[in-house]
Length: 506
Ligand SMILES: Nc1ncnc2c1ncn2[C@@H]1O[C@H](COP(=O)(O)OP(=O)(O)OP(=O)(O)O)[C@@H](O)[C@H]1O
Ligand SMILES: [Mg+2]
Image (cartoon, rainbow, N blue to C red):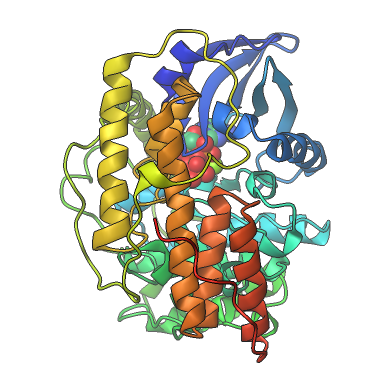
């Protein structure tokens, strides 16, 4: 949810914290720079969207997971200081990491191979530590990788993904995670995950850092999720072919074919470096996209050349990158401030990039059942702005229409900040009783019922399972989707499940 909307619509006066300014936002939370008054220290205060807080299961998981992950202390993991709720607003106070996210760096482009390998090493070390303590991150992606002032990277949001998983079954862990780009095959299939799932996601991040785009590209999230299950491990283009063993060792389809631990990956990386082609690690990647390069200075990451690359070749004096880094950090801070302006809701439709795998189910949102459980929301403090609601609803309906008729599933639930579901949820956060938004959410669930039925009826079991999980990410309790889930599992296991009748035509 938009930080400005959150600030004005919901009471976020959290006792013990003084909010200084918004510093970022994801699909389900707004993050503020705040002062923890008892210790007079700056913290990143993550305030979860009221939509999530309204879901009882999320609320209990959030607190449980938060308490556990607060025990994880490692230089490559963001330390959680505090977690709690106040007047129905859930928050988490964590170490403030000032250097921006890896997501920004991907967009910015121009990372050297040495920097990329340093980043992958840092993430792997953080994962190795957490995995050794029995934790799985479940949402390793560039947006959750933050830069410290010294250029090292840290992984944020350990355990949050599990809390956000709306289902009460561990077998669908990951179902509600925002983007399928970094999802492991076992997550896409809804199977239980362990640390090797995070290593797979690290592989997708490594691939994206080198190539500039995530490994699997498709117009809709199902196809991407399905590609993680069925498509071959992506191949790195020249000049990164020498790094293919790393991507293959991380992204093997079967978890037991992957590196067993983050440390094993780091060892393999060091061995590969010993035989790397001359100059390969100093290679700059060329992922800069038009118009994006000048907005965020590359800042702290630049200093990382002093690690892997300096093992191989003498470079500038040791003070050089820290000094340049500090200057660039300052520029980055200014740029970051400027970039905090909330994004506008698009007026138009969406671009089409793929052909749908199965024909669309046509759904009329006005004709669907009651809104799913989990959408009871706390009352906003201020009366909703009707113009804003109308704008959000129009954007939502337009995407709903598109995703249920033109390209099935596309823009229905993902991305969080630009999908029919995302806009309906924003409306519901402002106006919990809004009938159009409730009908819209129910319509999305109805769409998934029909879509899953078609896939299962055609005995496309894996596809059916992926579709079912996407629907259950919207409503984990939907009885019809649960039946279809059982059918998909049986079908995948070679059984001949008896399908329930097709869902009522809408
Ligand atoms: N500990 C932190 N220190 C500094 N900035 C942070 C911290 N945690 C989050 N941020 C900033 O807040 C932004 C939003 O974080 P959040 O976790 O809500 O979303 P995300 O991980 O980018 O995406 P998603 O909602 O899909 O998980 C981040 O992109 C980052 O810029
Ligand atoms: Mg995050």
